[in-house]
Image 1 (cartoon, one colour):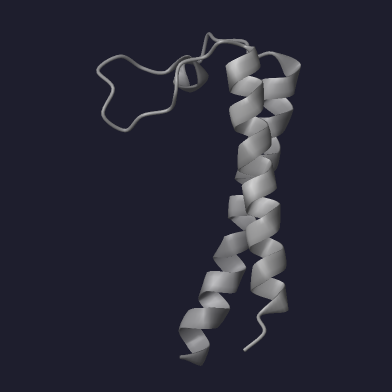
Image 2: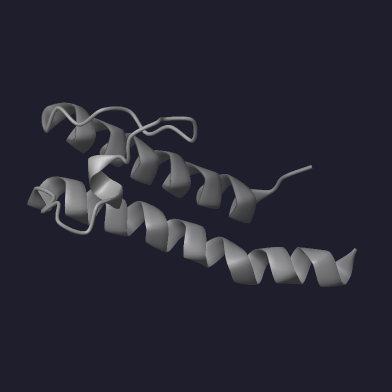
Length: 78
């Protein structure tokens, strides 16, 4: 079975996350973690992210926002 739309979305999500990872590595930011004791710099209000990290994060978050309508459609059709 061919799932072209899902494959395209997955590719876009992976690309956005890879860009974020690369920008974070370049900026020497620590890895993201749900279990960290200290707040990650990207979660702090007083942290000014480098432009490439900001843009990569914005793109990745935008891709996840695209998932909400898709999830609603999937849930309503099952």
